[in-house]
Length: 432
Image (tube, rainbow, N blue to C red; front, side):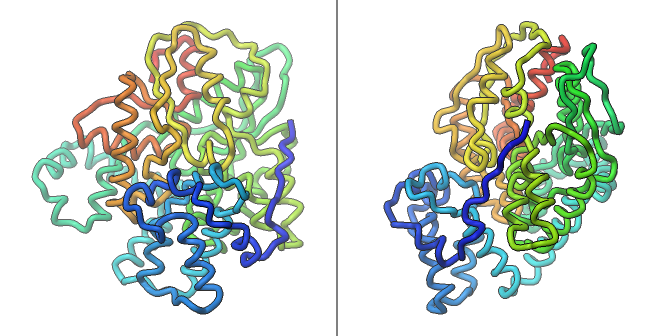
């Protein structure tokens, strides 16, 4: 099962790619920040105008201009809506790379960003951070701090870290190999464990393995794998993203597998772009393209695979949230719905304006907390309008964002990855 991942735009210059924008305005109603403020410079076409000015030397990358680029979520809704095929994803990543190289940030902002990127892309470091976080939560100190109003005295970024902190799950130690639970294996696949996913949502990886083996797949989980580079890439840290990518490719490329499975939307989008990231690197190009060609989101992979594991009934109203980097960046919309609809007794609820971003966007809700909350509140309103008893999301960042906003409203709504819900049906488990 090979995914022929095309590399549009790899052979074209950034200036050439900017010229594709004809300023038609189709992107405006789909852009979350334009919806928030109605400011042309906070829309895709407005930001492209700024990019043109910067590249022509007519506009300086000062704090005001950089702020417009920082406020972009990178949600890629504009890719879906653009009739001219403008590769805004390439343009914003290139611009952010330029910003990181030449624009000095305020000291506090710079230190906070360095802290985030010294922690989140490193599962071992993140695992160590979970220990004091777990004590902070279980001791009741977190609840006390929240009630006391002390968080209002801290920098907004640290208050946001507290707000997004999930319940601490016991991490599963992944083995290297899981055999198919069928007489004869149908396929052999490798699974990427992720960073945030494996530390905060290990149950998603466990469910992924159970479903794949139930469907007749041998599953390999390479032990030396690290970060895929998604957070770094989307924040303009291109060189760092490439270093992560090289290490990940090296951990997987010697495995003889039919597909490489990922269960986090933001990571999957970046993994499929590896060939594009290394398009001008002769030493890595072919290796990156070969890797990217095998990458499959778990929803995408299972939708292509004729099911053999029986689905047992589950009762519940499930609101399915379209993660931006699944729907817009990868074009995966129908597959998760097909999997959920294959479960007897389950009612799938469509969220109004469901393809609008929830405000998570990788590290966006950490660096731009106010905008993220405004955008996220719209999403939460729409989620609750469907009266669900479970939220399904295929990206850990989206789950954390929506749950944090629900907690502010004192609303409890179970959340699960679609693969967890499918696993509950196949394995006759309780819903997460």
